[in-house]
Length: 164
Image 1 (cartoon, rainbow, N blue to C red):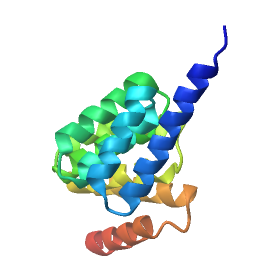
Image 2: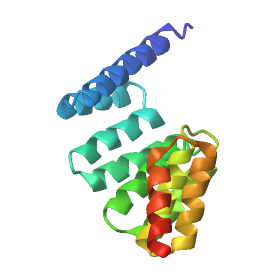
Image 3: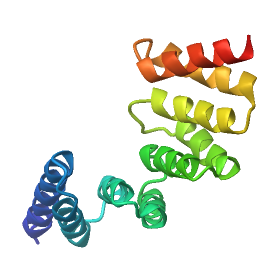
Image 4: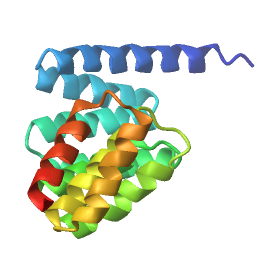
């Protein structure tokens, strides 16, 4: 028995994923959503669920975005992006205590690029809780990983001005 139909289905799912990403980058969110959903229907991946969640986030559908990220984690618990995204979405809602465990898991995920994002977001969560030394440590960790990351550099400078 050949695995050719399976490969074709995966290839079609990947095409829909790529088309969804292109539509999303151009701000065509409903089109992106449709492509990601089609990709998931053909061959569910952690990436497709995460990016569908990202699309929902841009549409203001935060709870649906979080649900998609949780589906991504069910498929691939080693994929760090959905943990970081959940944490970032919770930070937007000022739910800092809920965000921190998700972001900590993102920093430990085996499969995650770019690694500096969850450290930066963890710093944002600690900043929201007014835990300034923890926030400073996280921003510094982000900069150790990616020294050119301007958001972490700006956050660290702002925090230093604030506490001095």
